Structure formats: structure tokens, C-alpha cells
Amino acid sequence: MKYAQAVHCTQHFCAVLLFLLLPQFVYAQASDWPNKQVSIVVPFPPGGALDITAREIALRLTNKYKQPFLVENQPGAGGLVGSRNVAKAKPDGYTLLVASTGQLAIHPAVFKNLQYNPLTDLTPIIQLTSAPFLVAVNADFPGKNARDLVAYIKNNPGKANYSSTGIGTLVHLSGEMISIEGNSGATHVPFQGGPPSVAAIVGNDVLYTSTNISNPLPLIKAGKLKAIATTGSKRPAELADIPTMQESGFPNFEVTVWVGLFGPKNLPANLANTIYQAVNETLSDPILIKKLASVGDEPASKNPQEFAQFIDKEAKKYFTIAKKANIQVD
Image (cartoon, rainbow, N blue to C red; front, side, top):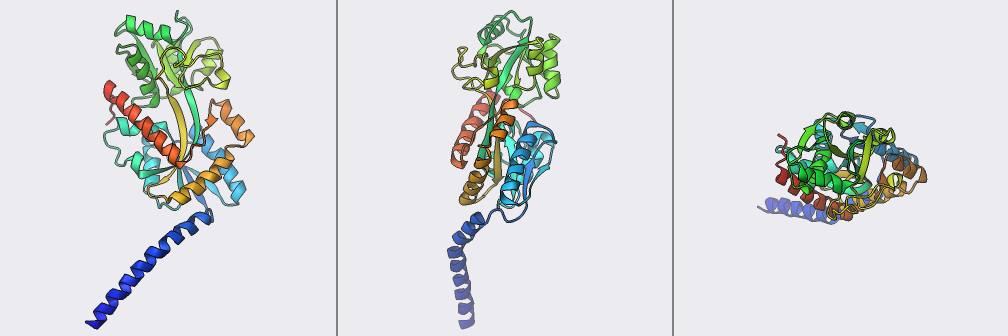
């Protein structure tokens, strides 16, 4: 009996000791980061916007800390595969994820079976970049601005259509938001990727699209497409002559494609802040800022708390749009 009591007391003592030491362990974990290789998962193939951003930041962190920050491309299912893998990783700061609006705010709204919840199974660390979409129409469209496009949709119920880069993408929901402004169900025509989605406008197969600036910009410069609005709260520097949707009379219309850095669920708050501070320093590099601007991106720098609140707001917005338009992916 005395032996059993002694064992119980020993176990109790160990539990108390572990409880007391845990905060110190977590603090040491944060203050010691990074002391080995850090993997940054990009859930898409090499060469895309997320991949380029991740590699630029990884390069600067490698140079700063003299530890390897390696980008791992884990494509599949529109970013689901790589994102889920990071969600299941050890929350020690050595497996991170670069993901965007689609994976965090759109997927929960449109997918039936995600097998994980990006809003609770990933830890926001820092918003890296933000960029508006560009609303484009055929060069022969008689209208001059977004008001004219919405008026055409209203006055031609069931006749207007728009292209996207696929069902359940941010491009799809952005196009649907314009359709909703027109109070008429414009027909969605999905394509596999940006180039064919804008080529369809040139061929007069669809009326409009609202997509990443890089997709229609070459055709706009060639005079084959017309830019009638951007979708952020302010005009991007390279398209300063194009009004925003808000300036065009749609005060609640805002769509941006944003990119952020995430850790697994239960990443300690002080470790997330340590990583935030490290990455935030890289975003002030003038060379990086110039590279981001060349593709329409701007540094964002929201901290973990601000970023989490922003994502929650974005997810609610797109859930409302997806439900209203009955957009769902199996």
C-alpha cells in the first residue's frame, strides 16, 4: 500500500513538474528557432505566384539565419493535399505552409469533404501579400466601366456569361459577385487555368471575367481586351488609371487574392510571433517589393492576430456568396 502511494506521489510530482516546465520549454523552442532545416510547403507545382513568393522569402531567411529554408511543392486537389499535410505536422515551427485565399477562405465555403478544417487546423502567422483582381471584357464591348457591365447583365437576363479558372475558385466567386450585382444569373463557364479563360473573352465566347491581373494584362496591352475595373479597395500602381469596383458605385465589392504563411494547429503563440517577426523583416526588402509589384502584389504584413481576424471575415463573406449562388464541389 505504501509502495502504491509512493508511486502515485511520484507520478503526481512528475506531472506538476512537467506543468511548471512546459512554458519554459515552449519559450526555449521559440527563442532557439531556427536551429535546423525549415520546410515551407507550397501546395501547388513550381513556377506559380505562391511558389515564387515562397522561394523569395525562403532565400532571404536562409541568408539571415544560415539555416536551410527549403520550399517543398506538394500539389494536388487545388491546394488541399499540401495544406492538409501541414495541418497534420508537428507544431514546432519547422513545417510551414504558404497558402492563399482559395485554400483558407474559399475551400471551407465550397467543398463538401475537406477532411480537415483550414480555419481551425492551421495557425495563421503572417499575411505576406495582397493583390486585387482585374475585371476584363472584350475590346468591342460598348460599355466603358463596371456600371455599364452590370447594367448590361441586368438588362439581358440569362444572356450574359463569364469565365473562370475552375469551379469553386476565387475567380469563380468573384465573377459570381458581379453577376449578383447585376441581379441576374449570368452563366458561369469554367476553364482549366487563366490563359484559356481570358482567350474565351477575346473569342466572344463569354462576356467577362474577374481574375488575377497577370492573366488578362498581356491581352489588354495588345488591345484585345478592355480593363474596366479592379476589385481591391485601392487602385494598384500599375493600373492607376483603372477605377476600383467601389469607385464605380459598388461600395461593398472587394475581392483580393492574398497569400499568407501558416503553421500547423497548436503552434505556440510566442513561436508564431517569432516567425512573424523574422518573415516581416524580409518584406521590407526593396528588391522583393519590386518583384512583388511586377506581378501586381503588395506586401501586407498582418500579424498572427490581425491575420486570423481577417481570414475569419473573408471566410464568412465567401460562404455567403457560395450559398447564395449554390456553389459546391464534391
